[in-house]
Length: 125
Image (cartoon, rainbow, N blue to C red):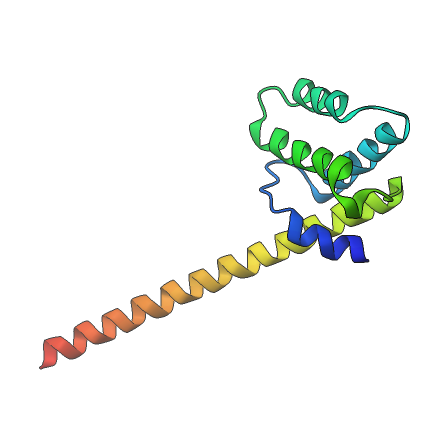
């Protein structure tokens, strides 16, 4: 659970066409590759090759790989731990994003209503 909390502070990303399950799967595969001896350079090269023409996905995968290889909290992640942590982080960020959009829309509606009321009041004066 601690890794999920730390991950939320460390990762903010637009996931493009990726599902949260996709992100968890990439994290899990990255851990497996690391455990088998793949270097950070090798993992980043694999990301570049597999995401050619998909800049959003490239950024997401690059961030995941860098975290798994360099973040102190990610040193001990297992394959399943990485899958769960990154999937949960993605889902939490999507929920926050939806809530923020709704809040912004409500604020815009309120501001518009207030401006209309102010205009009507000014017109009466």
